[in-house]
Image (cartoon, rainbow, N blue to C red; front, side, top):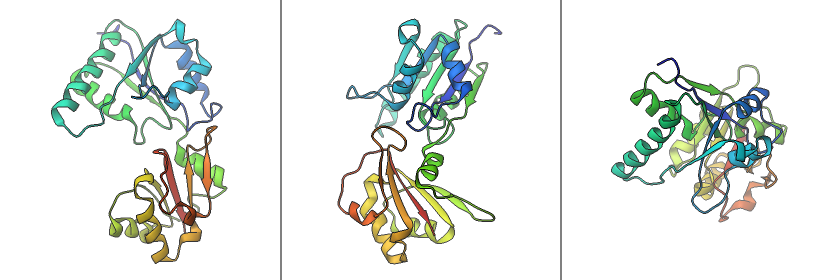
Length: 236
């Protein structure tokens, strides 16, 4: 089927609308269909807010895709099948679909699962990833802290409620970026205290966006409720 559309995973950066690549900008203009993650409570995703600055959405087919936040396997399977087939419906008509994602499409993004399922169910579809600036890169620049230099080792670790694993990650690397840190901030602070590294950590929320917050004194965060899009950089 040579007239199939192409599925693009389009990274639109960490929040600042100017941190979008020229290539992503061009494809936003060219793709007739723009898919984006739809949020439950009417809030716009970063990716959609950035997209709307660069294209006239009334001239595009806008596809809001809902990604279920559930561990129920059957419900997940059903919703994902629906999502993949709705995207396929456009591709089979020869229309290119740009799935916009904040950060980079190949780092912890919903695009990864969409691409994987599309490959499984419709292997004839060409899926192309357009890299974007991730919040990890952006955080280093906002802090003025290099993530890695010379022979140093860096780790990107989803923060979890496991003291030993979190401690080990810090002990074994020169620099660690902990993503999704909001839900375990108190545990992370106790790890840092025990390692004597409280002053080597910074926390950033919604980095580079208009709602960005940065804490260089992380002790202030004890017991605080933080936004989901929060990460911690620990550099020894």
